[in-house]
Length: 349
Ligand SMILES: *Cc1c(COP(=O)(O)O)cnc(C)c1O
Image (cartoon, rainbow, N blue to C red; front, side, top):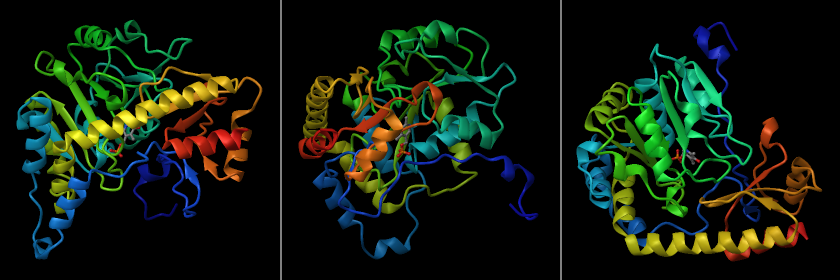
């Protein structure tokens, strides 16, 4: 802190990302990255972009990528926004769509811990709505005046899925505010709400290429919704950074969307490994919440979660532990390859 800071900076509470260890030999099950590499076609497309063209700015509108996303989901490019990771897309959403006098922004009490951080950054009042005892979202609890609603589906860090039908109820009850469904993990077991954007002009769906498309290092995220919502995001983006996606990111992300076969094969492997790992953890006495994501949320009735995480780390396996009271006895474990998952089971044994 110094006298040169703008006053609001001293009150900021930044997000703390999961550890990115410098030691390569650790089994890394802590930040929900994909254990398989990106599509070889995406890598090839990026290699093809490494040339003298890098002296030129990229396409500020990322049209090539918007086209690929629009084709994949059967929407128009005017319904697609892209940004530098979905975290940046979410930041623009908070900034441009959630500042209203009608009431607070609503999101679950157990949810993505970046949401309250953006509220702090943009001065947005919010209320955290308690999940039920099974850690499920109760949509009826969101039937009250609000400046907007946001939740991940499947939820993070629980992995629990809200069915499309319940999302539709929520949309109908909140016609006057924007409902954002953060689908960072939807490809691992849910059905996307993008099928509802033509019927609900208050729906915005966000996704990332960091998880199911194995490109966390590239930083690409997107939103799909009514063109009027997209236009608000474009205005913010063009008032902040004209070129959030570089030349490599645009072609790599587009190629990743076009390589459906690789996408289907790798996500199937992750889903199958998840089911196998859940079985092994249940056999060890863990309680595991039903997961539709590439991670599971588990607790052991006889072991303190923080201690368990520390002892796993000593054995070279890192998982994520959150201090928040309601979930302090849970561990969030990313699904790895069968070998990585076995290393976890061996360490627990
Ligand atoms: C990982 C994650 C994101 C952010 O993804 P990036 O595109 O890597 O910024 C957003 N929301 C949730 C719920 C996530 O878990």
